[in-house]
Amino acid sequence: MKKNITYREKLLELAKIYKISEIKDYIKNKKKLTTLQIEHILKKNRVPIPTEINKNILEIHSKKITKPFNNFGNALSEFLNLSFKFLKKCVFFVPLSILKLVRVIKKFILDLFLLIKKSTINILNKFYYFEVEEKKANRVVSGFVMAIFLLTFVVGGGKIVTLIYKTPDNSLVLEKNNITKSEKKKEIVKKPEKKEKIVKKPENKKEIVKKPEKKKEIVKKPEKKKEIVRELVLPDLNLKTDTVLSLFADVEYDLKKVRKEKLVKPIYFTQFPKDLDEITSIKLKKETFIKIILPLVVAENQKILDDRFKLNKLANKKMTTDKEKSWLRQKFKEYKVTGGKISELQKRMDIIPVSIAIAQAAKESGWGTSRFALEGNAIFGQWTWNGKGIEPLDRNKEQSHKILKFPILRASVKAYKNNLNTHKSYRQFREKRFVLRSRNKSIKGIKLIHTLDSYAQTGAEYTKTLAKMMDQNDLGDFENVKLTNHVNKSQLEL
Image (cartoon, rainbow, N blue to C red):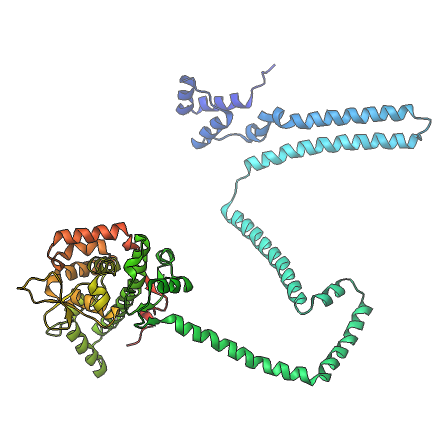
């Protein structure tokens, strides 16, 4: 008799016949390959595997698959046999027809169970050898997804309809859910009675007419509030620090929020509080100073960016109007550009990094507590020989300069920015800034601070001190801060 050859041995014989070196190497190296791995290698080498061999691949593991079925089947058959014996003993009480019926049911259940067992194994085999066609699979998957989408839309749409149906009057809907058609007709009859009641009350109609007038008044009030919040300029009232701090609390002005959201409210102080130096907490003193200076610096930068946007538009134009030419002449004069060179004006008309402006203001004004800052709103310690100014107490007899005096704090910020954008001593600063701008890189103070050596007599030591202040107080966080009422450049009109 022929020896029964297993499926694995048949695959190995095929490997020997077709001389598959990969399987031979595995066998020589004493590496055990699973049946599925051998089959995969044969398929990879295009070895035809007969259907008689691989049609029942799951028979290799048939014991593992069919074991639970066999156990359950044996238990079921034992249970049915015991129940049948019990019924036989009770033959006097149970009719013979019922015994025959039980036999038939027993046979039917066992046959059905065997059928389920065989069909399950066949289905698993089919799944194993099922080759998916991409087009068909895509159609099946897309159809399944569309069916789910339509089902959810129908179910969700029904819920939405019910919600809309409930909103006019919840009590009526609840009644309609539990009443008959005759009761619905009664409700329809009752509705005109409600209308008659409304007609009988002319006073209510007058009230209804008056309500829209009240709504108009309510709409106007928020607009007034918005105008106040848009720009708050505080006049010279000799404000005290406590008043300033309570104002910040009322408008919810918090530097942590500003750092996170990159937005600051346009609150413009015209002067520093006279008692700012009396704050014992150094941290609170610094935060109060930054809160006062930050909106002024950001506002001037925004104004420069608006002008720069307009200048770039005009630079790309072939023809300009008389109004545009007048504007250009004014800007050439403001930025001290000779010869009408737009390229030079583009270099000069640009922002001063917020971190540099705040650091220099803090350094030159002693965080808003110096005599020059309190008496003349001189934040940046700019010198003058012709204008109105305050004489320094430590000035030599040979010196004749003064510290330039300003009517309000914002005028000092504007003069400071004009100084850096026009004076020949800061040409390196402007060139470096222009390079960053042309390369679409962000203009940050830490990249430009070393170009301001000539701002003070100490030179490099001065810029090192400023860099340290910028780092210790995290002033770089304010570089991209904008005003809450700022307008996008694309919305600006020439």
